[in-house]
Image (cartoon, rainbow, N blue to C red; front, side):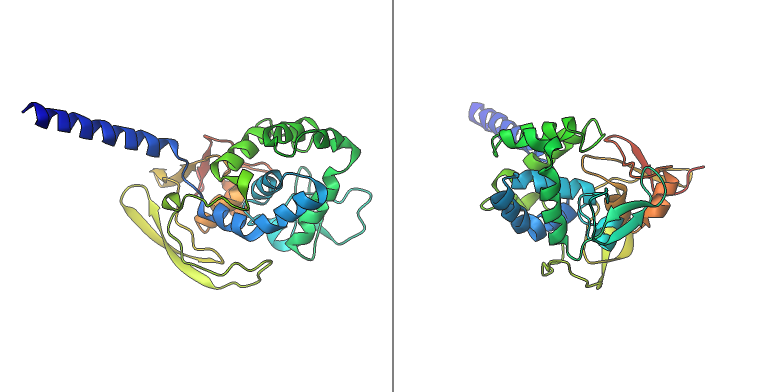
Length: 281
């Protein structure tokens, strides 16, 4: 009898430890994983050429472009939200930001955006960053915020969490934990792909409701629980969420999603915010 009780106690303890370990592991976003796979080589090249940490470059690209799905990324190959400024002589793209119809840089390829991002950081404003060890990604993240790259007070924390959750400090050798990745249809990774084939996916809404949606380029499975009350639906924003990624996940036009949430310019949801998927007033 004692042996049986001991076995039960040990089994329960093991199950508890496994559950705690699973709870501590982040749930990885499929769109982010595909973006990393597509652009990690370019980020590594930029590190070798310009001495900017590849993990910082890739985390910024993820955050600024909404995993490559923002309007600037899809229509102007601008993955870092860099505006024209006085010294820009290339193509431009008009986009509403802090004010209407602001001038943003437009690139022929996403790779050109990565190169220009590196050159942008080599300006005197960011000189202090290059005094840091290339391995000090936390110093770089906080330094970018201090130097004025972004006004979001949580910008550094978002970059650091993306780097740590997705193992970006060892891009050349690390394998992302496959058991945490939502299942997805395998597709070839093509840089600057213009393919628009549609894939029908099933999204889980709440605990037992499902809806099919047609989406292009990526086959995503929702990672947000959808809440509803009186015909109004919403999700809770998590780290790294943007209106672009949420709109893509639920097949909602970004402009419409922004209207539902009164989000003007480049404003993005904060962690814990309600993001409405339907009109709520």
